[in-house]
Length: 640
Ligand SMILES: [Fe+2]
Image 1 (cartoon, rainbow, N blue to C red):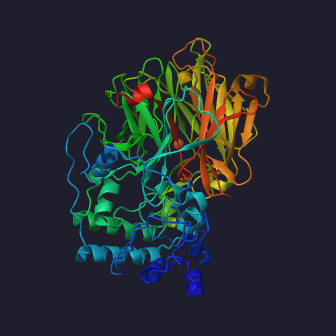
Image 2 (cartoon, rainbow, N blue to C red; image 1 turned 180 degrees about the horizontal axis):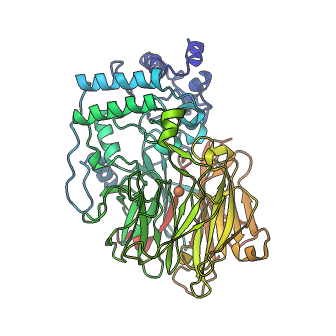
Image 3 (cartoon, protein in one colour; image 1 turned 120 degrees about the vertical axis):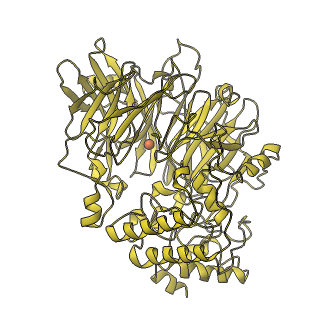
C-alpha cells in the first residue's frame, strides 16, 4: 500500500484517507515522521519513535472531512513537534490564554472599527462539500503540483516544513557563552507556516504568516514563542476547518487553472464563505516598528498590528488601516528614518497607478498618496530605498505577464528580457510625481535594497543592493538565482549611472545598523545563499571599500555542514550613543542544524574578524526557515 501511495504522488486526498485509517487504528508508529519518510514523499526532519516524540497531534477529523489541518500529518513534510529539550515547560501566564482567546476573535481593524464578521463555522454544509470537491478536482486533474516550485513535498521539505501548532512562551537554554546585556527586548522573525496541508500547488510565499519571537530580558531566562498572525484569512479558515482562499503565488498558473480557481473563488464569495474586502493576505514576510506600533507585513494586504506581552507572548491586534487612510496593500519593506521617526512606503498594483508612494509621520499617521503614473507597466516591486532627500524605486524585468499565463500556461508573474530595468528617483516629501526622474540601468534587477544615501550635496545618490542575476528564476528556480551585491551611483546632474559589484558571493537578506537607514554607512551583514533560499552563513561587508573596486568582505561565519540560518539582524550595543562605532554590536540569527533537527539562536560579535559567537541559545522547538526579522527593544515593547 505504501508503494502505491508513493507511486501516485498527486493522490493527496487518497493518501490522506489512508493516513486517517492508520490513525484510527492507533498506529502511532505509522504516524511518525519515519513513516512519512518510508512513503518516500519527503525527507523528514527526524525519525521519531513514539517514545521520543510525544507529539501534540490532534485526532484526525472524520473521513468525511475533506480537509485536514496540517497539524495532523502531511503527505509532503515530516511533521516535527518533538521538543528539543527534555522537559520543555510552557510558561504558565495569563496572557497565554488571553492570546489564545484573541485568536478566536473576529478580525477587527486595530483602529477599533469592526470588520465584517467572518462566516460561522460550517460543518460540511452542502456548499462547502461541493466547493471542496471542486477544489480537489482542480488540484488533482486540472492543475496538479507538477513543478518542484509548487509541489508541497518539495517546497515543504526538511526545515521548510511548518511546525504543527503554536508554541506559547517557553524557556530556552543558553548552552554557550552568555547573552550581552544590550540584548534587552525581543528578536521576532516572520515566515510562512501553512495552517493546512496544501492539497494542490503551494509556493514558498503562500504560507500563513507565523511569528517566532525570542524574548530576552537581562538576567532572566529567554523565551521562545511561535504564533500565527491572526489574519482574516487565517481566522476564517480556522473557523471553517479548511482552506477557503486560493494560493496567490501558485494557484494561477495557466489559463484553465486560473479560470477554474477564479470561478471557484467567486462562488465561495457569492456563497458568503469569505469577503475579499477584509483582506486576502497572509502577513508572512516581515515586521516593522514605527509610530509606536509593531506590524506583521505581507505586500498583498494591509499591515497587521501585533504586540508582545511582558511574558513573551505574541498577540495580533488586528488589520490596521490607519484610520481608513491606507487601502488595499502596503510593501513589506517600509523604511523608517531613525532620526525623524517617519516611515516611507508604497504599494504596487496590477492596474494604474501601478505604483503609489506614501509616508507616515513620526506618530504613524499616514500622509496622502502619491500615485506614480510614470511607472508604465505593472512591475514586481518588493522593496525600495530612501535617502535624506529621495526615495528610489526599481522598475525591474519581473512583472505581471498575463500573456505568459494565457499562451504559455505559466505564472502571471514573469520576466520580460526585452524590458530595460530603470531606477526612479522622487523627492521623499513629494506631493506628486512631477519631479520624479527615471534612469535606465540595463541588467539591474533588484528584489531587495540594502541602503542608499546622498553624496555631493545631494547631486549624487549611492545605493547598495543585491542584483538578481537570471531574474527569470526568481519564483520558479530560486536555487539558480545568484544575487550580486552592487554599489550603484546615480549622478543627478549628468544622468549617468555607474555600478560595480562589491562581492562575488551569492548574497541577499542583507541588513545594516538601523541607525544608518538613509545615511552613508559602511557595514552590511548579508546572508550567504547556498543555494537560495537556504542560507549557509553570514558575511560582513565594508562597502566603503567598494570605491577601490575590491571585494568588500571583511568578516565571515559559515554555520557548518547542514546548518542553515536566516536573515541576520544587527543589534547595536549602545543604540542611544551617537559616538558609538557603526559596527559596535551583535549579529543575531536563528540557525537550524539539519543533522540534529535542532534550532538555535546565535549571537555573534559584529566587530570580531570571524563574527565570533558570543552566545548560543538552544531553542525548545525548531524554528522553520523564513523571511525577515526585527529586534525590538524593551523600551519600545513597553509602549505597544
Ligand atoms: Fe523581502
